[in-house]
Length: 277
Ligand SMILES: C[S@@+](CC[C@H](N)C(=O)[O-])C[C@H]1O[C@@H](n2cnc3c(N)ncnc32)[C@H](O)[C@@H]1O
Image (tube, rainbow, N blue to C red; front, side, top):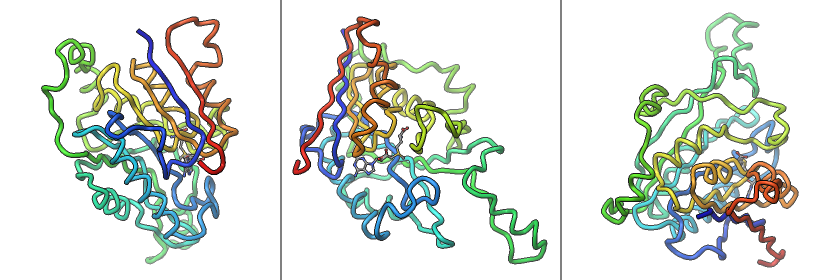
């Protein structure tokens, strides 16, 4: 049997198309508050940014099934010399929405990744105390949970089909709170102008926190990385993306641009909300 994939073009502050308790996992990375390169001046204020997170957290809590997980890739952001405590605020917001705070994983990018800025250059120019600003190689992956999971609710057959590969788990060190993962290369054509996360991130999250045949949602869909990997792993997917111009990118990335040729049973639907929706 094929899997179903639905892309909603609209604002994820409301998720009216998605019924209560119908999603089994959420994996996402929202725009980081006014990130200097990717989202300069996107929000009028930090309060407005937190307001979006609050609404998305509330809707996510509604659509997630009992016991299920929200994987949030986010990090603190330095904007015009001011550091915003996004991780701390996001944890508070999600807990206020009803989620339990389950874990925090640190994603470490390769040492060569210093795209945003070489802040450490300040000290090289001024090799004296008080000039130290470290280059940032880290992001957070915060794991929230809605209530308690009932392990008995999964059939034996589905459980076996979703079994993890222990060699992969151990060799790639998934078991630690530090995940070494490459970032998406700047200039990759499908992720151009989108701060996409690497496929490895939803790959680990989907394998670790959902079963085959279940539904994975990404409310900040971007280029469609989560949807692509959900499909690859035999899960259904839902994506919400505010930018209509990303439909072609998402259709291509998920493999549905060539669906006719592939002629398999997976289905893909795009819903474009009216402005007032
Ligand atoms: C950091 S990117 C996500 C990238 C994605 N993880 C990927 O791998 O391509 C955030 C995305 O959220 C979208 N976005 C921002 N605000 C939104 C909102 N309120 N509702 C839906 N999408 C939104 C942006 O247009 C952007 O594409």
